[in-house]
Length: 143
Image 1 (cartoon, rainbow, N blue to C red):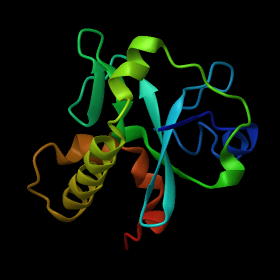
Image 2: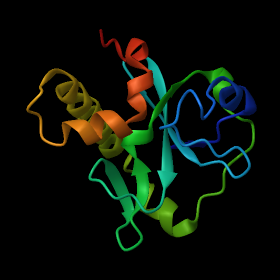
Image 3: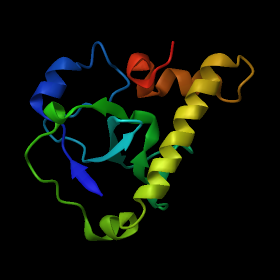
Image 4: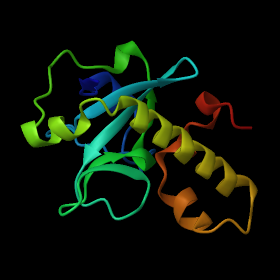
């Protein structure tokens, strides 16, 4: 499992006014998990107070975990050199779960694609309105 921070270059290219659904906290940045899908790297933020089912929860009581809906495609140039510190209890819940997280994220991408194409898809409006994927159709191969 690779934990990363996004760097100033990423934040400068992805401003809140153009990308309002991205989790952009430059002063106190989110820790992300880096995964790869079909040759594309993604950063999935570790968040708290997640109020939707599109996440891998590490702490159900506080709704903390990996939020698939706020994932962003990245390149190596977007990764900060600072090493994140993960709380031991959260790290313990994530150890050995990379495959599950990757599969959960792939399922979320398919859910997002289904919501794009099927007007009757349950929770369609919420998925499309709040997902960070709405800005990255080209990187996902969505036409």
